[in-house]
Picture 1 (tube, rainbow, N blue to C red):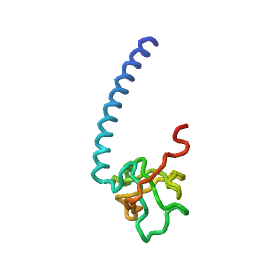
Picture 2: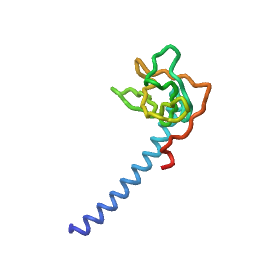
Picture 3: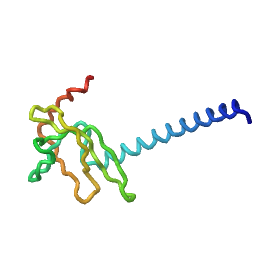
Picture 4: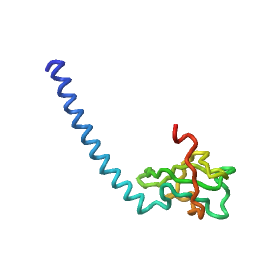
Length: 126
Protein backbone atom coordinates (compact mmCIF):
# COMPACT_ATOMS: atom_id res chain seq x y z
CA UNK A 1 0.00 0.00 0.00
CA UNK A 2 1.38 3.37 -0.95
CA UNK A 3 0.93 6.68 0.83
CA UNK A 4 -1.94 7.95 -1.37
CA UNK A 5 -3.97 4.78 -0.85
CA UNK A 6 -3.35 4.90 2.89
CA UNK A 7 -4.49 8.54 3.14
CA UNK A 8 -7.58 7.82 1.02
CA UNK A 9 -8.60 4.86 3.20
CA UNK A 10 -7.84 6.76 6.39
CA UNK A 11 -10.09 9.66 5.28
CA UNK A 12 -12.92 7.26 4.40
CA UNK A 13 -12.70 5.50 7.77
CA UNK A 14 -12.44 8.79 9.64
CA UNK A 15 -15.60 10.03 7.89
CA UNK A 16 -17.43 6.82 8.92
CA UNK A 17 -16.19 7.19 12.50
CA UNK A 18 -17.29 10.84 12.67
CA UNK A 19 -20.76 9.96 11.35
CA UNK A 20 -21.06 7.16 13.93
CA UNK A 21 -19.97 9.47 16.77
CA UNK A 22 -22.50 12.09 15.68
CA UNK A 23 -25.30 9.50 15.62
CA UNK A 24 -24.35 8.14 19.07
CA UNK A 25 -24.06 11.68 20.45
CA UNK A 26 -27.57 12.49 19.20
CA UNK A 27 -28.96 9.34 20.85
CA UNK A 28 -27.08 9.97 24.11
CA UNK A 29 -28.25 13.60 24.25
CA UNK A 30 -31.88 12.47 23.94
CA UNK A 31 -31.41 9.88 26.71
CA UNK A 32 -29.59 12.40 28.92
CA UNK A 33 -32.29 15.06 28.47
CA UNK A 34 -35.01 12.50 29.24
CA UNK A 35 -33.19 11.43 32.42
CA UNK A 36 -32.69 15.02 33.55
CA UNK A 37 -36.33 15.95 32.84
CA UNK A 38 -37.51 13.08 35.04
CA UNK A 39 -34.91 13.22 37.83
CA UNK A 40 -33.49 16.74 38.13
CA UNK A 41 -34.92 18.89 40.94
CA UNK A 42 -34.20 22.05 38.90
CA UNK A 43 -35.22 23.31 35.46
CA UNK A 44 -33.22 25.37 33.01
CA UNK A 45 -33.79 29.15 32.93
CA UNK A 46 -35.67 29.14 36.24
CA UNK A 47 -34.66 31.25 39.25
CA UNK A 48 -34.09 29.47 42.56
CA UNK A 49 -33.24 30.41 46.13
CA UNK A 50 -31.42 28.35 48.72
CA UNK A 51 -33.61 26.31 51.04
CA UNK A 52 -34.76 28.54 53.94
CA UNK A 53 -32.55 28.23 57.00
CA UNK A 54 -29.44 27.28 55.05
CA UNK A 55 -26.47 29.58 55.04
CA UNK A 56 -25.85 31.52 51.80
CA UNK A 57 -23.71 29.42 49.47
CA UNK A 58 -22.02 32.48 48.04
CA UNK A 59 -21.58 35.51 50.23
CA UNK A 60 -23.81 38.33 49.05
CA UNK A 61 -25.94 36.20 46.71
CA UNK A 62 -29.29 34.62 47.45
CA UNK A 63 -30.81 33.83 44.04
CA UNK A 64 -29.50 31.45 41.38
CA UNK A 65 -30.64 31.06 37.75
CA UNK A 66 -29.98 27.65 36.14
CA UNK A 67 -28.48 27.69 32.63
CA UNK A 68 -27.29 24.11 32.30
CA UNK A 69 -27.80 20.69 33.83
CA UNK A 70 -25.47 17.75 33.56
CA UNK A 71 -24.95 14.22 34.82
CA UNK A 72 -21.58 13.08 36.04
CA UNK A 73 -20.79 9.57 37.19
CA UNK A 74 -19.02 8.71 40.44
CA UNK A 75 -18.42 5.01 41.13
CA UNK A 76 -21.07 4.17 38.55
CA UNK A 77 -23.78 6.36 40.12
CA UNK A 78 -25.21 9.42 38.34
CA UNK A 79 -24.84 12.76 40.12
CA UNK A 80 -26.89 15.69 38.81
CA UNK A 81 -25.32 19.14 38.76
CA UNK A 82 -26.62 22.52 37.69
CA UNK A 83 -24.59 25.37 36.26
CA UNK A 84 -25.81 28.91 36.45
CA UNK A 85 -25.41 32.45 37.63
CA UNK A 86 -25.89 33.94 41.07
CA UNK A 87 -28.01 37.08 40.71
CA UNK A 88 -27.20 40.32 42.47
CA UNK A 89 -29.89 42.50 44.10
CA UNK A 90 -30.64 44.09 40.69
CA UNK A 91 -31.38 40.66 39.10
CA UNK A 92 -28.15 40.78 37.04
CA UNK A 93 -26.21 37.51 36.66
CA UNK A 94 -22.93 38.19 38.42
CA UNK A 95 -21.10 35.02 39.46
CA UNK A 96 -21.06 31.66 37.63
CA UNK A 97 -21.23 28.54 39.75
CA UNK A 98 -21.72 24.78 39.41
CA UNK A 99 -23.87 23.16 42.14
CA UNK A 100 -24.50 19.48 42.85
CA UNK A 101 -28.27 19.21 43.24
CA UNK A 102 -29.15 15.48 43.38
CA UNK A 103 -27.98 11.91 44.01
CA UNK A 104 -25.34 12.74 46.60
CA UNK A 105 -25.49 12.72 50.39
CA UNK A 106 -25.45 16.49 50.88
CA UNK A 107 -26.82 18.19 47.73
CA UNK A 108 -27.53 21.89 47.43
CA UNK A 109 -31.27 22.29 48.00
CA UNK A 110 -32.78 24.97 45.78
CA UNK A 111 -36.38 26.20 46.04
CA UNK A 112 -38.18 27.82 43.11
CA UNK A 113 -38.22 31.59 43.67
CA UNK A 114 -41.48 33.50 43.61
CA UNK A 115 -39.63 36.26 41.72
CA UNK A 116 -38.50 34.85 38.37
CA UNK A 117 -36.86 38.12 37.23
CA UNK A 118 -33.39 37.54 35.79
CA UNK A 119 -31.75 39.95 33.38
CA UNK A 120 -29.33 38.73 30.69
CA UNK A 121 -25.68 38.68 31.61
CA UNK A 122 -23.96 41.99 30.67
CA UNK A 123 -21.49 40.13 28.41
CA UNK A 124 -24.17 37.98 26.71
CA UNK A 125 -24.30 40.10 23.54
CA UNK A 126 -20.55 40.34 23.08
